[in-house]
Image (cartoon, rainbow, N blue to C red):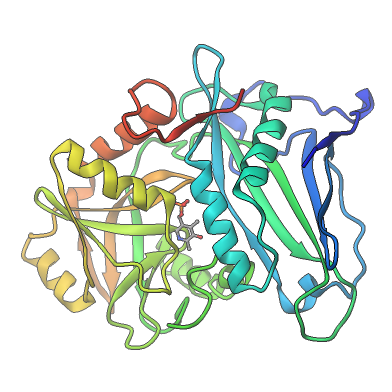
Length: 357
Ligand SMILES: *Cc1c(COP(=O)(O)O)cnc(C)c1O
């Protein structure tokens, strides 16, 4: 499918921030966006890259009432030699279609998804920050825009991609976050939508997040929705625990988001001399192992921060501290290696990096 590039009038071009330390996360957007529509009987149509602008949407659109929406998150990096790369974008395309299937939304070819992003990022390459830890965050989204209140899959969709230059996630340095294990609210249940990257999962997680903040914690660690006994994941990160040279994470059981970073850790760690295992992690057993000093490190994995070290873990009023508040050796090694591959400092033996031009 041909993607039409609409002209960008000079007066619509935004001032590019020069101070890359002030970028933050997802607050600033580039000049253009990719837009493709889907209509029943017609399929994908009218692909275009157009000036970034608000949508005018009918208040009755399905997305506003029944949350038929999915999204993705990935990043582009500009290497010191000027080349621009994406990290495993085909994984995001695949997951986007899995989310689409769960929400009864149309499938988009991996080729159109990845090529559309490449074309948009190439046009917006001057927006990609280059300071250490910065990148261009890419947010593909699909929404249901048929204006009708009946509960059924929409007959009209927008697939769009917006870009946001983002700052170093750890403005104050690579510091451990403190995590509260949630034993009341749940994020997902077997048979639900936990495996899909869909807005509703995040709306329903906000309350637990706010209550955790009030208690002084940065993030919530979700337990399984049936027994509230098994570790699932953190807000937008999968969780890993290290026992010496072995790292464990929960298996993909249908209610956990299948992270691209999680998959990358599982493939990368063995090449760095660590053993990996996907196995159910029972919270009481984990707390006992932490008390006994068997758990040597804990970290989260996700596109936004790549690897996040965990400091304190609180479960039912018991607070346990990991790594003495410092960043563990495995956590640091995985962070350095993954970001090294993404930014071209280390060789990519996996074929993960995809050049944009
Ligand atoms: C996006 C996300 C992750 C991390 O996935 P990555 O592909 O590694 O960015 C983990 N959990 C949830 C709930 C997410 O939405």
